[in-house]
Image 1 (cartoon, one colour):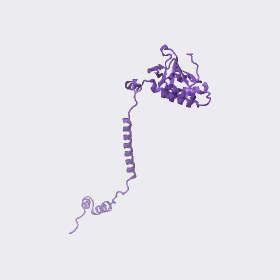
Image 2: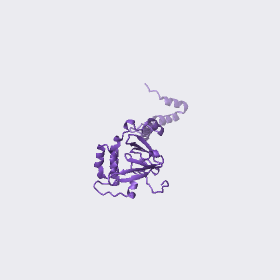
Image 3: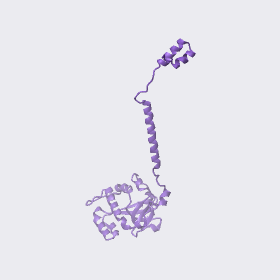
Image 4: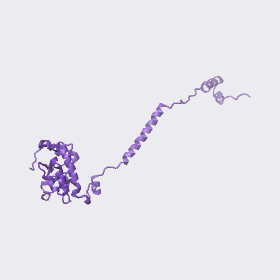
Length: 244
């Protein structure tokens, strides 16, 4: 049984002469190259896949950043009372160990060593005291435009930009503005640590400041209106004070 002619050749014979149709069929159909896909993937397709994967990762990271909680605003902090000290924690005895820790901190930054003659000058200690952290310091108001604040004394529990919050010996929380107020504090010598501990044991905390050769400092609140974290990197300069 003779094989039937190719359908493409039949169609070409209807449109072209026999010789032309045979030549076209041989060139375009019989000898047409067959392009096979290589076994290794195309480099361009790999780059596109990596780009799509990177875009997906970026979307995931962006979504995670959106899910992070935002910091509280000043209004939200006031409403929630996040920085308020509970009434049951407003006791002077609770913060006496904090005062002891603050003394050790100040002795360290001033280079005061137990058993040695510690010579401290205003020029050398002034810059270090000005940049120190006063959480735990025992302050005394010696002068203020508000007469009712004079002679207030207590341990600093919060040092804000414009105020000091202190716990008095009467277990009261007082907020003292820094502006137009002069504060005084004393730094006993390291040799009096045992005497301070004995005074604490007898609950006679007032004897802590009666040590011999105690260093007495006064700070002017109007020139001290900075947060504790800002004072650590601030350079204070000597300026005239019209209030004096």
